[in-house]
Image (cartoon, rainbow over all chains, first blue to last red; front, side, top):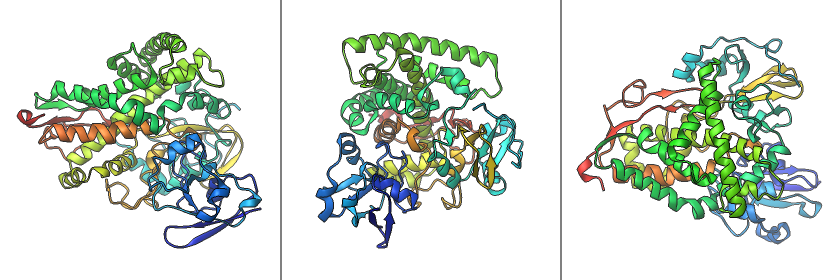
Length: 107
Length: 410
């Protein structure tokens, strides 16, 4: 059961534990993490579950798929090299302790 | 699961007059949120769910709040379609239709043509100095754009707009008017013919359109499925961007100081779009049917219960949006519900955002100098000649009569 740390725009952080195989967005939404809106419920069509993956684990998390890559060009907050849609990031034990930053805006 | 057409045990029964709802549903919604956030409304034949958090909760549980509503007006109007399907059928159809509506496709494939059409429409009226911005500009613009994105090359903007009106009347025909059903049937028949021709052409020569995308989808889609889903898209694809255009233009014309700020800061058109869609949601509600007993808003609804998720009400929920009845570009960012949520999140969202906030609004204020409402109506003057808001299932101004300095129009 990997634990993920969401760093929120106001400086606070939320620690969430979820089963391997859960997507990051679902882990956030199930635990009421503010700032992960996820309007489309995980279908990569709304770009409102944007996160910045912490640089030191970014390579392990990997890059976006094609559809996600397109959506990331249209996020409300700026796109950065470590931007991902959290609905497309599957958690695994290897990602235990992952830190992600939630942007100021999603819509 | 057969639909239950009665109130759930213990559910408050609230009589709402449909004509009152059409004129202005917001006072009734405010009362429901306060006193009966889940209420059986006999005239609608459903439980109305009116608080933001409850609606969001329901949207995120499609396996409980099913889109497969039996006996729905939409099913009667257009036949089986993705809006009234759950996954995996919904996902198959959505995946087939969606690629041409994604934001990069909108920007790279469609935006240039959208802009040309907008200029052509403005060329026709610029010298007149007066127009109804709904009938003379917004509706033909979004209808022409929709024909393009769908791949209906033989259909005119008038065809698309007329079909949309006829089907939307059917979809909200709670009074069961036979004339409305007849017009809807004529429209859907015409769409079936047009789609069959377009699909045949796209089979030979893919063109990047929605019909072409469905014809060439990885998972096969039958012609009937393409036809029915095009009907649904024509229904929503006209009135929603048209209405959000109308509401937003109306809001700004009534607030010159806000308009000046927006014109000085073009990046804020996006905020105008989102706040407009929150303030007066073009789609006011959509139905769901419960697959199992489920407790929500303090009541246990039996399996088969029919529920309306009243997103127009959720978007005015004071517990989420302070001074929710006001149009306020500066309000703290909270996600609105106007595009729906979950797997049915509006497929046309990116098309609408672009055609309205990047093209239609900036162009009218740029080209029609001195633009103002025809009779100086205020926002509260909702029955004025300048424009009248109408509807609750769908809502927007039926007209938007304006004047400008014709001699200066570019």
